[in-house]
Amino acid sequence: MEYINQIPRTMIDFLIITVFSLLIGLSQRQLHQQKDDARQTFGTDRTFTFIGMLGYVLALLDPAGYKLFVGGGLALIVILAIAYYFHIKIHSDYGITTIVIALITYSLGPVILTQPKWMVLLIVVTVLIFAELKELFINISHKFDRNEFLTLGKFLIIAGVILPLVPDIPFIPGISLTPYKIWLAVVVISTISYISYLLKKFVFKDGSIIISGILGGMYSSTATTIILARKSHDDQAHLKQYMAAIVFATAMMYVRILLIILIFNYELFLRTWIYFIVLALISSGIALFIFFRDKAQSSVKEGLTEDKNPLEFKVALIFTALYIAFSLITYAVVNRFGTTGLNVMSYIVGLTDIDPFLINLFQGKFSVSIDAVAMATLQALVSNNVLKLVYGCFFSGRKSWIILVSGFIIIIAVNIIFVLIV
Image (cartoon, rainbow, N blue to C red; front, side):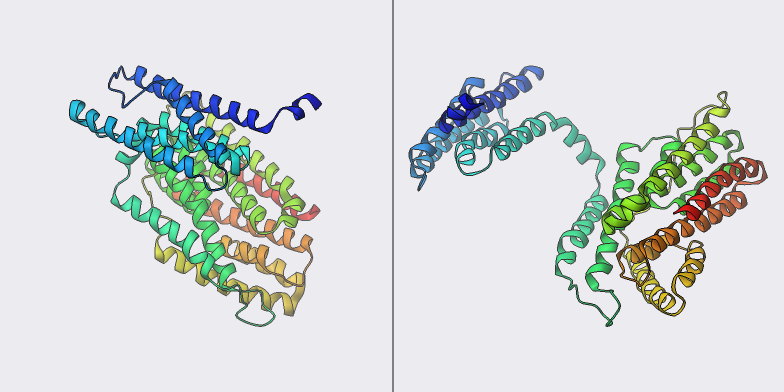
């Protein structure tokens, strides 16, 4: 270790730049060989190595103003421009990826002199990955239509533009309800829903009913239960697959709520994570048992057809209104009736949309203990599971009742046990 510490920093930096530049050059050569493309823009793997070395040496000779580095960069740009001109003239190929990568390689020198070494590693790894994923990005761009880019723009606006601008000042004295907390709740729910939406639409577009149940549970287990139950009513031949998917949606509900707890209340997460993990595993086990109980049943490739955009303005407006309403109601109930009132309210709220209530409970500073909050959370999930059981039986038909009741009774029973011991 002492010997390593005696090695000059400049030597280590030089070796790092040389190796990383060579790796970039080798990746470019490999890409052209895979495509059997002899029309390289310029140079070979050694060329990239020398470009990286040149950038480091020039930056090292003038670390104060980097004038030599800038001059060398301008000379390199001229050479690349000439090569690019003749490349277009001869091959009619307008791609500039290799040229941009060469300029990034040249810039590694100042980066390693002024930034932590992990930054150089991050740049090189990113270049290598993005260079290899060209075909993947082309396929993704073909799948995206105009509406998808608008949806992505909406998400970036609500998460990256609006959230930092809203004030974190309470509306009403004594109630920890601020515009920032309200919009943060919208951003968190929208993020989870949007990721589930993208996975369903682009990654598992032709996925099975089971995949639809899993991804739908990350968005809304109640809505997923209703959709799958309705489909099972018209497709009795694959009833067990639909029932398994419904139970999987409930398993993912526990995962989703646990993620929300982790984001908003770390103390509560430490207090309850084991309960949610066990409930998610038990629910998944029941779903797998239902699915594999009849192995002769053929697999269904059709998934949920309702690819609803989770970032619609109406959805955000409803969530915001519910969040504010539950904040005021919870504050009034806790102040007047204490823990008893919160327990009763949690069971009632479980029959509605539980996310606004739970996020408000996780964020708020109410005059109840962390154990009371944990109990209220689990109680709301008990009544929510009862609601999904009723929906599932109502929309799917009598043949599914035994399967759903048997599965949900076990889940609800374990949930109630955790309510009693939390």
